[in-house]
Image 1 (cartoon, rainbow, N blue to C red):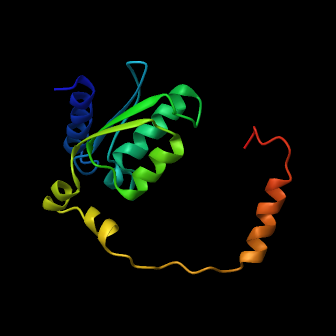
Image 2: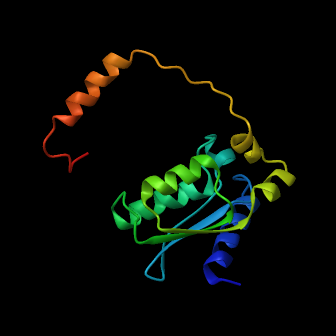
Length: 147
């Protein structure tokens, strides 16, 4: 068994035994050192965004004092949902290793498949011109290193 996946599994078990949420644990590794870890804390935090990958990304960013995790790899007990996959892409993580797949997650009562198969469009464009003005204001800022 891969040593990092083993630790991700331990994270998942820790979250389950603490009543924090589902069986989702995650570690982030840079240069063979764990720089972030997390497990599902949806129930604990009463926040649907507190998935294991999100918690590990937050932890790694604090540890490394950056929002760019481009030299990191992520190990997680389950295939990332679309929200987590988006966060992984935004963090620039270069490789993801997962244990269980979407069908496995579905089989234990999670609804990840819904986000891949159903295309409910709940979005509607509103006040675009006003929002574009904010975008233009941001674009005019020369030094964006503080953003």
